[in-house]
Structures are given as structure tokens and as C-alpha cells.
Length: 427
Image (cartoon, rainbow, N blue to C red; front, side):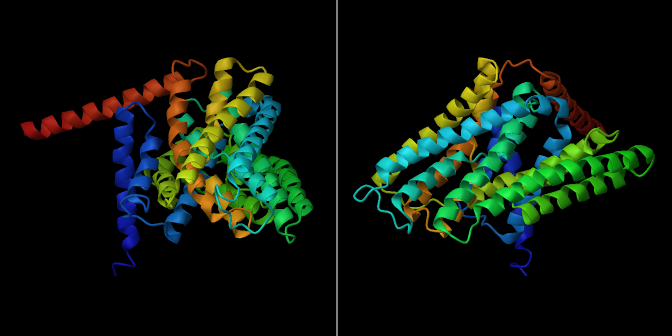
């Protein structure tokens, strides 16, 4: 019985620990998402080993990130996203090239006999390139949640980060496919590229038709708002499935476009509030905690530790410099360029997935798993903190008002609970 219902205890620990540590990090003026990430790391195999990765937690966390990206699509300013489309591509492209080169150079100096012994089956050149490919990854979910929390998702820089991160995922898939096709002849690069093109054609045609049909239905229905939520969720899940299963594109990309398709209706605010509540109460804590739970720290030698530190520095600087340079070329201000560069730092679970795929086809030695894990941990934790710093005193967009309203609402709830307590004591 304990085994069958152990998931209930896991959920209770995750929800409680993420909330408690979220409040702790907030006391130190850090985003609460940092607390959720730390909760998974502390209670997972890396430290206390109370929580382990299970199929149940993995599935729920996948739904969590899908809902998170769907909400991002709902709240995206489409006109601003269109304006930043070209800029987002340039930012993403340079933000992929610079880390790719940086990772290759670092691996070139360390991936040698006598320094770090490799057990990978492919050529050393391909192994070094693959380390660079890992660094091209960006975990958009971390930045999105942080930008939502600090109220900066709808700013000019926020839209650029979101657009660039989505394109970054596509470019990352292409880079991963090219390098794996060199190591595994069963992977056909042209088929993968063709599927990506077909995905955007599908989204362009099907998205317009679905948006018009959904908008007509949603605007004409006067009652039963719950039905709007259910139908929107169905669209989200279907497009997530279609993106991953039919076209080989990340399911979160499908979820993001589903949010854009459903947006611009009379019920957008209602839908956004309902999904935000679901995400905040249940799904997001599980997703962010699951990232920490995935982390298992391997044994590391002195040369591996040195490689890890240098790789981490390159991982951070290459995104800040690469994406920041792309933003500067696209006429963003120096402050906005820094914000965009910082917003692209996090590698999250994306880098772990890429690394595991590379190891499966002999592109990466097991000795490099430790450094990759370290890069994932540190970039995932520091990105929300750095985003809070670079967006400090930023008055662009409606964010500042939203932040204040949120703070006043929480204060009002605290005062109301205090009054209830006083009344109960008086009685």
C-alpha cells in the first residue's frame, strides 16, 4: 500500500518545500522560482535523497511546463512579438553560434588523453562539437516564470527573450540533428528539417482557421465559462502532442503557439487567470522541483572540476555576449541587451536531455556528465536572480503596476486573516 500511494507523500513534500523555500528566497529579494528549484535539489538524490524521479512526477512536470508555456502564449503581445520577430531570430542565431564555438574550444583543450579520458565512440572532433551543442540550449521555462513573477513578460525585452528562446529551441534541434546524423546514419537531417518547416506551415494555416473558429464560438457563448477553459486546455494539449509526435518539435513550442491562437478573445483574461491559478497551486512547483530531482552528482576529479568551472563561465558569458550582441545589432538599448542576454542563460532540463541523447549515440563521454550537471544547476539557479537584478528599476511596460497590485493584494489577504483571528479571539 505504501508503494502504491507513495506519490501522495511525494506531492505533499514537493508542494510544501517549494512554497516554504519560495518564501525564504523572496525574503532575500530573489524570485520564488529559485526556492522551487532549490527544493528539488535539496530533497532529491543530490542531497537528502527523500524524493526520486518517477514516471508520475515526470509526466506531471511535463504538463506543468506545457501549461506554463501556454500561459506565456496567452499573455504574449502578438503585435510586439511580430515587431521583434526578425530581432529574435538574430538574437537566437548569434546566441547559438557563440556558445557553440565557446563549448568546442573548451572541450578541445580538455578532451585529451592524460587530461580527461573519453569513452565516447565517435571522433574527438565530433565530441568537442557536441559539447558546444549542449551549451546552445536555453530553458525558456525558467525565464518565462521569472519574468511573469516580476511582471516583465510583456516588456520589449521580455518579448524578445520569449521569441528568441523559442527560435533557439528550433536552432538547437537543427544543431543536435546535424551532429547526431554524423554519428548515427539512421538520422536523416533533411527529413528533420522538412518536418520543422512543415510544422510552421501547419501552425500558420491551422492556427488561423482554429483562431477564427474558437474566437467565434467563445465570443458568442454567454454562459458556461468553464467550457472555455476546458476547450482551451484541449487545444493546448493537442498542439503540444502534434508538435512533438508529428513534427519532432518540442511540445512546449506547440503549447506556446496554442496560447497565441486562443488569445485575443473576450475570454483571454478569464482563461489566463484560471490557468495561472492551476499552474501556481500545483503544476509549476512540481515542474521546477523535478529539475532539481533529476540532478545526480557524479564523482569528479581535479581536472573535471577545472573543466566544469571553465565550462560554466563560458556557458554564462557566451549567452550574455552572444544574445546581447544580437540585441545590440537590432537596435535594443544597452540595458535591454543585457536583460535579453541574461534571460537566455538558463540551460535547465534542456541541456540534460541533449546530453543524454548525445551519450546514447556515442557523442559524449560519461566523464563529461558531471560538468554538464554543474552547468545546469548553476545556470538554472542564477538566471532568475540575475533577471531580477537587471530588471531592477526598469519602468518599461505595465509590469511595475502589476507588481505593486500583487504586493498590495497579498498584504490585504494577510490583514484580512489577522482580522479574522482577532474576531475569533474576541468571541
